[in-house]
Image (tube, rainbow, N blue to C red; front, side):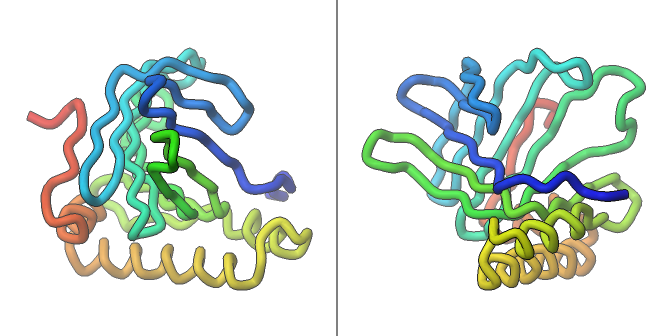
Length: 174
């Protein structure tokens, strides 16, 4: 399947304003932001036909954004985490966090190996000049480190918890 060629997707997480500006420029209200020493958690509703809520952990030191999409029944049954590889930073002088998606994604379905997707997008973006060679190499290194870590830990959630030093919490945690 041919990938759609596009520049890196960018988002803004405006903690003081309690908004999230998605990669298409839509500004959405946020229900919760939680700042930690290792990253930023966000929870917001979604007006999307396939999911009605989004949770995100931005983890700058890992080069990862871990997401749980709360899908409508029958869509992507079995998917737990969807992990973006990229550059995540914040807060800036205005209290905002920033995300730049470097194309590679990891899909977590409990009981299965972590799946790497969108490799074609990474190659096309680099060839088109949207991502430097160093950025493409970093994306591959981050994805590889994450896949090896998840495999050696038993799953990606356990590996992420170990990397940040405590459990990353989600709405459906008991």
